[in-house]
Image (cartoon, rainbow, N blue to C red; front, side, top):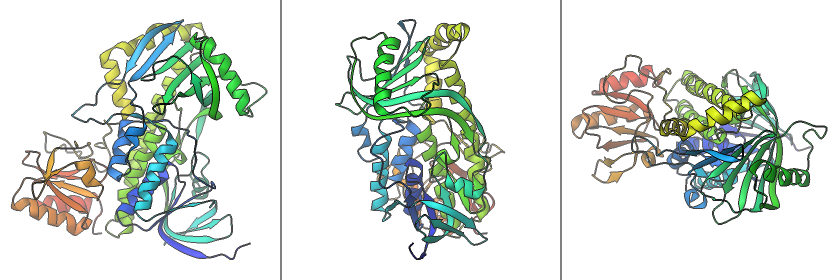
Length: 507
């Protein structure tokens, strides 16, 4: 056994999936000494998630990690939905509202992780593969972790981004209650000779269950297939060939398309849909994010989106605390802002899954004749797109929101802020999301007050505050690193008070 060696870091992130990598990028970009470890021997080459909704695309853009992903992905235009052997609805993704042009991407989780690792490498951080966490204990000043090889590491904070079976969550003693939603699903990424339009996904609702087919990778005949099947004596021990053979039967039976030929499989899986939510996201110096904090049905593709949103929210708050610019109590706002969103995601995905996998003649009749046809309505499509994209997420009801609703017109604290157009102090054009990669943005009318406001913000937040102009509003706006409005007002005294009271800066 190796002799125990103590190393140290400001923050240790356990788990190098999209959530852990996004968190590490957010921390490292703000000067935090972060280490990332993962128990797997190497990065995954296959993909669990295969859609990055618009909110997730914006997060990667702000982190400087989007790279060439749009060119390596398909832009989902919608889903053709079939029942009773005929198409009954075409669910189209409505254009983003409020001038936001960001749209979802059909892209492999493996490619998303690759892009995040590239960005993390640019920030000087490498992933420690094959490093499995065995135990963790915390005290007043930090967390000590022990790895499977006997080495130890001392960190100021520990972030568990290690999935639904989180070792970090167990070490923190955080409960993870929940219930099963659907008994069993088969999943496979397959190459198929299939004469289908690849600009949209498809769903078939059959008396024996549902079948979903989602195109993957431009220029390839790769499809993501998903189908619910009853449990049998094989349990969850089906091998790749057995899963492929089942899909060779299921696809023509449920789609009615007898011409499809499944050539081979890139990846297969059997899983049971669970709905679980951590009792809290923080226990002292240990924090949870992503699947370690919440798991739900994959229908709707919300997992990766919600996880990277957790990461971005936590990163800027933890960076302030690590730098000594904010009190640790600021981290309680992470749970307060993100857990209600996860509750809503769990509620929506569970309800949709139960409707779409309806059992019994009456349930299927309601689904096929009432629920699915509603998706043809433009108003329903706009609302469904808004919900799935998470572009409408606001924290105005959270502890950092403005309960007084002042000023009365315009965005409120906690609302998302548009990407532009803005200008830098020298007149050069600037995008808000690109600016936030460096930290904070202060959008203010030109003149003396803008300089005084910027000086106040930098005094309490540090040098990572960029001054922008261009809204035409008499009010100044301080934008958080996650793109949400922090403070809105006119004078430096009000800004200082908000930073001191709401963010616990300078305490």
